[in-house]
Length: 206
Image 1 (tube, one colour):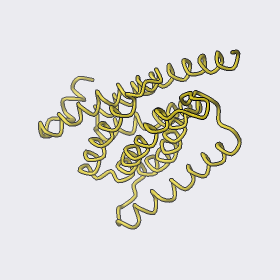
Image 2: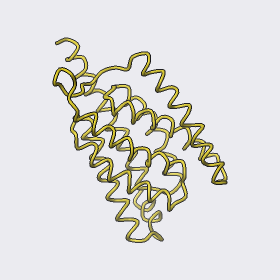
Image 3: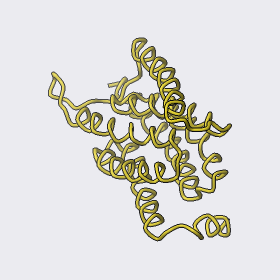
Image 4: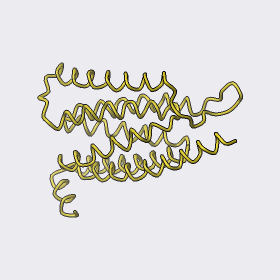
């Protein structure tokens, strides 16, 4: 395992490794803050996704880059939603998606897949087999991020599936730190789902 990481970064600049490490730490903190319903999920996540967008652009992984660019934008939207009080002077609470939100989620997933695929074609990127995994994961992550912004518990289900999908993908590509990060994301996301479910059940009972 140690040799795998050393070989991965042997020819990588200190600048890039430092940036990736910062994104690694902040990304994990962001998921942890999300689990705790802490508003710091968004500033830490925003910095992490901006850095990751740049690193993926340099590496030429367009699909992954688009995911993280979207994360940066939706983080601002979620930041506003989580800090805005509702009509009863209460902050946004954890709930389940209703039928309309599920429908929007499915449409967002489908549209995202077509958009990312179209971007590959427009910029004349050769689509390899692993890029189709990028495209599929893009749909999951785009939808998950929107569900998180409106505090729907289903966001964690999508994160878990997406994280499980991309963890071996990043390892295959030699992006060891990102692979480890998404493995940790998977573990934290499972824990977060259980914690949000407990909070949701308590809210329903009261």
